[in-house]
Length: 102
Image 1 (cartoon, rainbow, N blue to C red):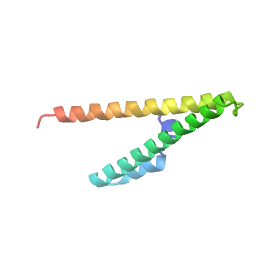
Image 2 (cartoon, rainbow, N blue to C red):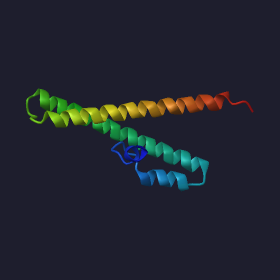
Image 3 (tube, rainbow, N blue to C red):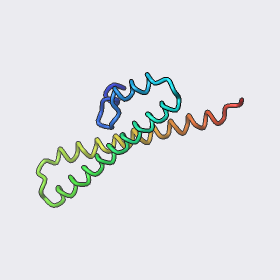
Image 4 (cartoon, one colour):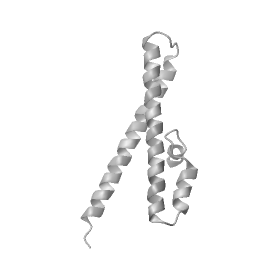
């Protein structure tokens, strides 16, 4: 199940993940993670814009294939849900680190 998500349309590619794993420096890992996150959010935004455009075309009667609209809408919804879950896990990990006593 992880492989399709990594290679999916959300912008995270296996090459990007491997590049982060192979880097030794913590600062570089953080920068690469930030770049991957930014690219992913941009792709999710592009998916949302595509759904909005398809909705306008469908509402205007210019789109005949409803299935494409439904597929694009579900894809955008799943990408957003995945992003929210990743954010929740990141916040949870941060809170756990902050609770750690030294």
